[in-house]
Length: 370
Image 1 (cartoon, helix red, strand yellow):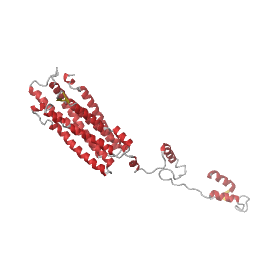
Image 2 (cartoon, helix red, strand yellow):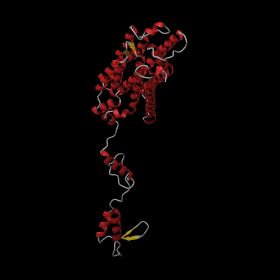
Image 3 (spheres, one colour):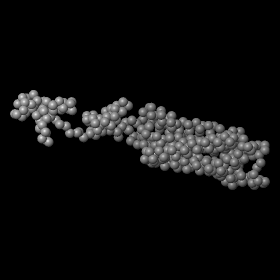
Image 4 (tube, helix red, strand yellow):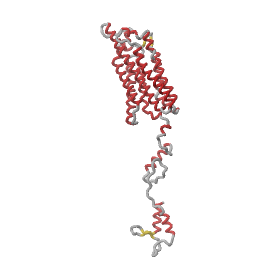
């Protein structure tokens, strides 16, 4: 590897490997989510569209970073640190200056796109939370306040990378990592505190405690993003200079993790309160797996057994019954007056004209009826 690949606190191989792995995981998660939403849940909401937009900005940031930024970044940092063995591109000072100009331009684009992907993950969460609080007026007011604040955070966070050093193709841009430029760049850390608002919003949602804990455990965007932000801001300045490698790495990581976690809300039915889910479910008398299995088994035997009217679903159409036949036959068999006058044994004439002894028929009737 080249000497410049080992400069900084994050070496080039670790930088490329970790960001590429998390990027692949985020892309797979979004594809899986959209597939579930369209093919299985048959739904496509606004939070899905915001997530797709966030994925597009993440892909753009990833491509620009790996094609235009990484190589220039490590060479620029190595030249600034006077790392031994580093060979600058070109043979003139102008070539080295142009390297710095190009790096400043592309790194600004990368940081802005990465910030947009982070905010897209936040807005996707806000759109999802709206469905949990849309019937609570007080929470709706709170949600709109958070939404408006995040719109401001989006604009400020994206523009601060330009405002920190608005000098392009200018030799003064090389002084941005120090002095006043360093202070302006640090100012954007204030906007990161707005990520904590999602935690406040979550704590006020009226869902069961178990569901809230599961939501925090599975989709811990707020806590995890705050940790990443603290790490990024705390290590931004090193030896009196802005550590560009550190800043780009952790910001890219934040975007990838945010998109991945936002994609996990595809299984949103898990977070719906039980009362809401049962509001659309017809009442059932059976409970437990045994009753459920028994009701399924009884429905399968519906063609052979009589419907009692207690099972789930619509009752089966009752079959024809010969009501009163058995009582009539028994009463006739006990009466000596019933039967043919020329016969000592009572008989029953069928539709075909055959005569059956009444006692024999009674036994047959008992055999079949009982």
